[in-house]
Image (cartoon, rainbow, N blue to C red):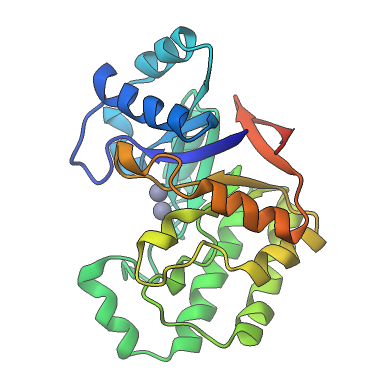
Length: 254
Ligand SMILES: [Zn+2]
Ligand SMILES: [Zn+2]
């Protein structure tokens, strides 16, 4: 059985919650052999999430488990806002993601030229420091797309990258968080799963739990290449996937 714990309903504001819309994702998940689907949205859309609808669908389907989560932007100084988001709602899981380096939306196509104007090592150091802070905050069940900074294909040498990421992994382990194996990078210029295979191997050595995700932003992306993500994890040694229900983890073989 596969899982997909990162499926956006509202995406970037283009879509709305409706039974018909969510069912399209669920049908696609079933087609892709996804046994647990986790709907999420970016925290700025929290007011548009329909909790009752997800609960209703979860009750109606008995051939797939349906979970509801939130993808939170980790930005230093947002502590109180994040605490309110995380504590005040009935989520099964919370993903903590870094999309901004000092107000720079580095993963946004409009701003990717900034990679050419700054020192790449500097960018990576700053990015990973933020991911580490997010993990150590203890607010998040899942760390989203761990090496998203490679999205445009601007990469450090693998050994440099692995050295930098080591401290992040140690902190994730200390915090007890899960790292998603996110196939969304295959749809981006980097054409790679997040995180890269050498990082997944190190995660396995450190016994850091994983979950699978597609980062779908439309029904068609549901379960997209999560099988490939799972194969990569298996190749590194993983035999269990983490699933979430009411902020509690359990593990299923895959
Ligand atoms: Zn994200
Ligand atoms: Zn996402």
